[in-house]
Length: 260
Image (cartoon, rainbow, N blue to C red; front, side):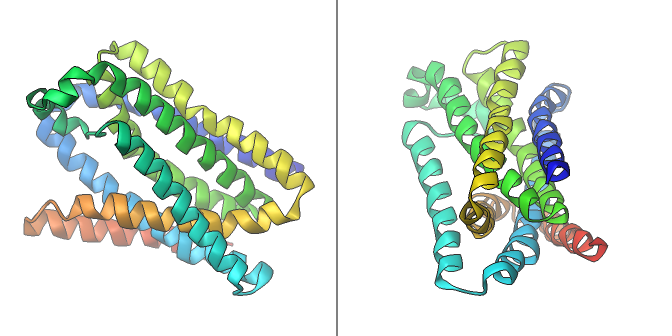
């Protein structure tokens, strides 16, 4: 179990370091960034779906059977991530970097843009804390499940952190200040993992709950947040690329399953 804990802590440190990826967007044009983001979004959606249906749910069912407890835990994951996203959107519209150029035309966004960065950091911090809990719980069940969960989280965090970096710049943060505070927000995943390891060591119920809970969260993020973004592109070439990378994301999760 000590080895599993070390794996969990190393994983959340890597997840936290993903937050600095936003700096690479400074050298990219708006059009290139838009295309890259959507490819990453489709890959992320595939890995989240694959992680949920190929790793987390099968492991949960193997541990406790396909019971109502598993179903309610998965629904709790959907509900919690829905509430977090609803809370964030109740305070501001979180734009992707390629959308920032249009924001000055929105009076509400202009008046309150200085608050957008703070709200983004707070909302992302809560999200990353839950990610830390999920990663810790997955490693306490099995290292391969933990690796699959970490990979799914990382691939989801890449486009998310790029978007957050853009939002922080828009709201008035300097480049280095945006990187620093974005990293601090991402580092709440480390706190979440430590809390998860402490709770999991004392409660088997937590470990049994966190797998279907994470699956529900992954399905919600992929189905309601990521996939709708892909439907905004109607070109055949773009659509084909999104479909292929979506399948690739699921294939990555299947590949990890074959390596167990």
